[in-house]
View 1 (cartoon, helix red, strand yellow):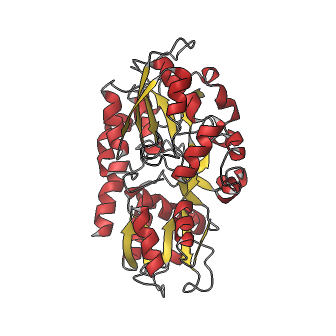
View 2: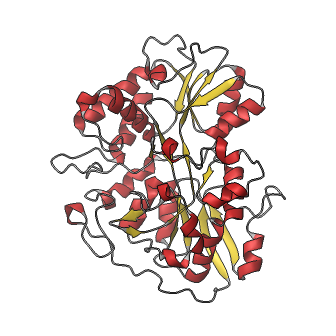
View 3: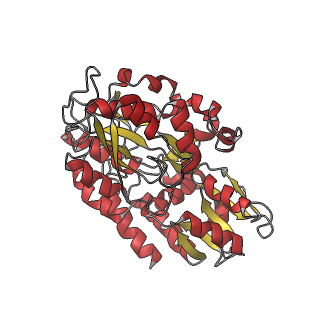
Length: 400
């Protein structure tokens, strides 16, 4: 399950030096990106050889389970038996830690989030992926392939793992009428003052930008992660005003479950897994994808450009998105699987329906987390956008 360590951190600012002139999706492993910064030329693995006996992985908690947390939750030992590759896993608490660890060259594979993947690509820390060596890739939902956070100029740099949306949750016994828009959390005259909650991260600025994109078209926001000075000020002003109504910001999903159960929070951002847990605890809550759409996440398995065990690395990437393993990790972690065949393998036969795994129309309304960089991600060349260091500074000010 996603937990409190799984948040974006202020330390991302250091990585912006790498990306300051780069735009994801407009360069290649051989070419030059916007601003003249090249993507390092790194060859992809041409063919799969024998496993090297082990693989060193960096992952989010819950992605590499060997039964030690729950005897019934184990997709590592099958892999080790089938391939002869012993799994050595290090759980990282933040994206910044993942990037730092990958630079050491001691790890073969990483489960990078969208806020880290571009840094790893432009920093030369990961290699392009030869998807023909990952047979299960063919069954990954098309909606997750060749996206801005996992490819550059038509070159794939990773294998999609899963996806999820940041939803709006509310207590049905308190919030009436039922909300349909993010406007309910941004209303300065909200009757729920002090009981509204929001995600505790600078990336939450994208939620404000998404709302403004739909409600104030005159601002010209085309991508909630690409904000010029005027757009950025509008988003920060909206969150500054919202702050007066916020009871608490959350990053630990278990604490949000308890807050909604106790009634300390009655309205705010959530994940599907949090809604499920709160409902299981008999809290009267519902969650919706609001009319404006939502932000969300999709993590990517990437292979180190300095991998000492590339064959075992590829075998792992193929295994973790195999129908059985991908179904198991999706249920344990609380997200939609990447492999469409995984939906036939979940223990809860309604799981993929609950998490909208096969609903591309649903996910077409989700703007996946992507690192804000100075080169506007919406393609504009005549202005500079605010990078993540600016987002971090603004978030500190907003929270006070």
